[in-house]
Length: 185
Length: 223
Image (cartoon, rainbow over all chains, first blue to last red; front, side, top):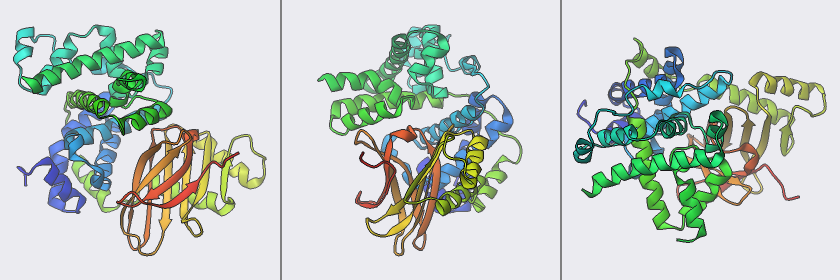
């Protein structure tokens, strides 16, 4: 059971198999809770979000499409959306992207020559983030983890809408380039 | 590359990140259905966005987390569904073919109750419409506009089984999938949050696995 693929575990979860459900939760709970905690900022709220994320995965397992990405990416996208909804319910609380920016998203100590030969996506994406200007990084974190639109970022950062869009676009194109390079090497 | 491709690529990073407004999202998705190059471009950006989420730091959940999740799976009727079901029953009991409740409507006792409900929820509107085959009523759809906005659908039609797709038909003519309802013995209900603007929704439709439309709830009528 523990060596089963992500897809097999999800299929077992959807079918109501208890062993698959346990294995699925154990496989992903640290990632799911970690992401919820990084966005929400408190353990209680993060636990509620993480719990709901697993329930959504269970209820909507049939909606998972392997062509669109891994089970982990699908589950984390559900978690992110729930965390954003939860944050929006607490409308008075300000967002602190620094919390996420300080959590090892960017590798600042990867030499360019090492990044160029790094085989895994995470290292290359970290290296690409590490090379972004700080204001691009903030825009990326606000959009990717907090679901903020370019308009909301422009208002929060007091910058023109076009500047917010450019920061998001430039950052994403650099991440894409890092991954496309990896696939074509 | 034409003008629509250029606009799509401009918006593609925000689409991939899930940080795009409803009308823009609908416009881009409409173009992607007919442009392979732009679709590939968005897929690559989506892969980058996925990779970004995978970088988030792991953390150990509190003790007992696993058993709490397993217990919830054993009793899926959770508070959100109970709340929406109660609201559904209440709205349906007092509404006609469709009804919209705004904070400024006339203050009869029933409306007062819904104004109080909306104020408690902090939302702007709650609307209901009957789901029909064209002639026969088979259920209801509710749209709530707030933070977050949500949809709740209840269907009862003998013979239906499996998962039916719930789509929102937007004012610009585009169609966005918003959820799915699992039918057991001809009955099913589903509720979930919406990432599109509620006031951009003209109708909610239910389609089967082949994409054929089965039921429709009309929220806006031609003026």
